[in-house]
Image (cartoon, rainbow, N blue to C red; front, side, top):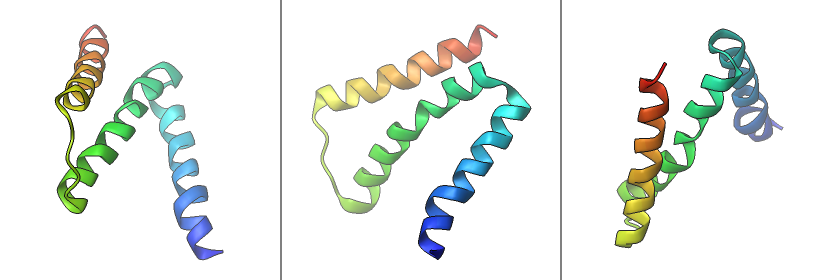
Length: 72
């Protein structure tokens, strides 16, 4: 029960509070960085190796987020 609360309920409540504070559109854009951070965590802590295409995909996601945030 503790693991379920810590890994699902608490992050969900934080996400709802964040959306309330910054708005749904901006929250959706910022949430796109989650999978990229997970990939970087795998590279750093699990010694995973990424192909150039995967690195390019991460770069494109980060570039898109930057462009969307810059326009505001």
